Image (tube, rainbow over all chains, first blue to last red):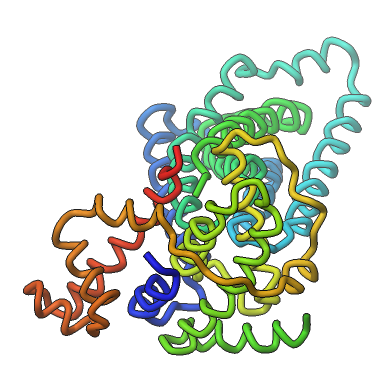
Length: 213
Length: 179
């Protein structure tokens, strides 16, 4: 086929494109994914029994702000990385800053503890399952995000996959807070963050393979 | 560079607003750039150049919603061309790094003559009859979508959807055509 013929063909397919299209699709996908994760939290893990009381406290919200903040930075990065020729440095820097602040808070808290208390803080009551739970909860959201990204045009598949995974992990971690009773900076900075990182790693591996176009 | 940007970007914006003529003009100008850009980087396999031009045009068209209207158009188009070139080498298992080119280099490419894309011709023949007939009617006979749809017993809306779907299939199969 001649290139000019192809161009005529493409021109025949040139309808108007809404300005907000890719971002909107990503947001809708994220909304659907969050619903699925919520159903999983409720049906599989269950709410923490003291949820109402915990919501009256401060740390519940600090924890949620940390993970949701990572999620917002992740969403922004995904939206940028899905577009060719656009930098994702700013959302990356914001995500890294949020992480840094929280890790510093955890270090400060850990340093102020005596040896045995520190171990209790690190292990909490659920350190063996926390990271795994977050990674599993993130999976449906990650699948949806990658599917939408395939329709966009990511030119850096591995990095984009990582951003998609970290975004999914961070939102999953936020909802996981409805189940998980852990309430120290030390625990959250370690195991929650690791859950987000694992999801990011899975996203990077999948992205390398799935985000080709 | 600024001259090309100031030519292409308005065409892209008009195209995104549904102006098919502006869109065709944009793709035509872009195809000249792409041909020269790929030509200089595929010296060992000149037969692949037009196939890659066509694959990139399809990608530019099908993924044009990812263009952020606040950004330079040429940066967007260059990133797609570069990605398609690297992807081409990866599929061919050629270990080559793209020369450290930038957008200015992409823009400076001088036009060369076009060949026919063999891969696209081949891939077109793998489409289901109905889609192929529609593509042929629009491409070869130069019919409008509504006329072409009428011949195939489709409403204009259905013809539109069918054409878009056919283009997506072509783009996907084109990527694997040389394997």
